[in-house]
Length: 400
Ligand code: ADP
Ligand code: MG
Image 1 (cartoon, rainbow, N blue to C red):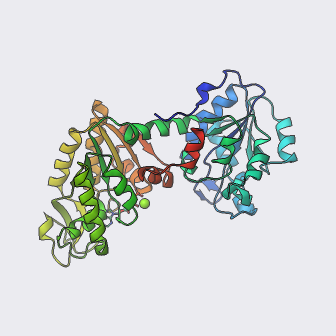
Image 2 (image 1 turned 60 degrees about the horizontal axis):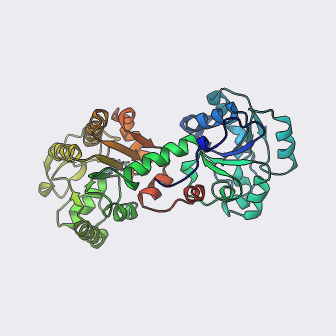
Image 3 (image 1 turned 180 degrees about the horizontal axis):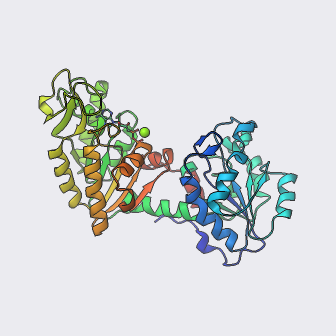
């Protein structure tokens, strides 16, 4: 496990401390209020713990893409009401991130009070990781806590720079995420299976290249499987397929072979002539029997059962990308069945299961499997970069 400090490394009583806490409050909005407050719920334990231990808590967050200038619609004051509701405490809005206004506000806050600074991306130095901006912000705090794993793939002043200027700690949500990710690909119990699905191989090349060196079983589903099948000479009809990637796929298969990684491709598939819910042309067939005017929209039931058996032999699973076009029935069947098998194995205690990715999170929720997975990352881009084996600057900075 990589070394980083957590809130456990701080004294119990934080009275007199000013904690600068990087959080993700980039909430999806509709008509002036948040449509999903998962991100606030994720950082709530850290905020309440620091405040409860007596620190003055100053929240730093970005909101949208203001491109280095102020914008009235992208102020973090837009979300403060939603944040207060979830946290259950009053929060003072501070319309700056550094300077005299911040200093005066800290003077007004009492021990255990919470303040929210304005959108960090109003300042061009944020995304440039400008040391001068980081220094100006750091001057207000006595410690820095990063609880925004989802922003850790960016080397920005408040996600990376600050960690070098103040004693730096992972918040509770960051800590949980890093522990789960380490259990999945860092120092996992073997054998490890990876499920990689979704629409296109081209968006996940780096993920595949990293995984073949780390896992014993690579399960390919979704539109990506079509590209793999086509590269092996299978006629995939009018399926979503990146034919030009055949040489790349061949290279990945060779690399998998050399590294002792078994690549699992579907041998039966669900096809239809048109992409619609429950189409009349729906049928299940062997991958070698797809007609010219048909498209593969899901992995077939026999293959799913075999994949479930593979999972039964594994101790660890990491999953990104749905097995089929799960938003449209009945092309959710393979994703739902495999997710439920993984969830059941996790409940039994035989599997550690970690999943992430925008559509994957939705697909696992649709399968009713989210609760039973060991960990589901909602971090999006940062999760994918981690699956690519990249160093995340915000995490590296915490590890000092
Ligand atoms: P994530 O957001 O979890 O990383 P992706 O964005 O890579 O996942 O892929 C999700 C999308 O892939 C879904 O919209 C799904 O409908 C689509 N998809 C999966 N299988 C197929 C298929 N066989 N044909 C077309 N689209 C597919
Ligand atoms: Mg997606």
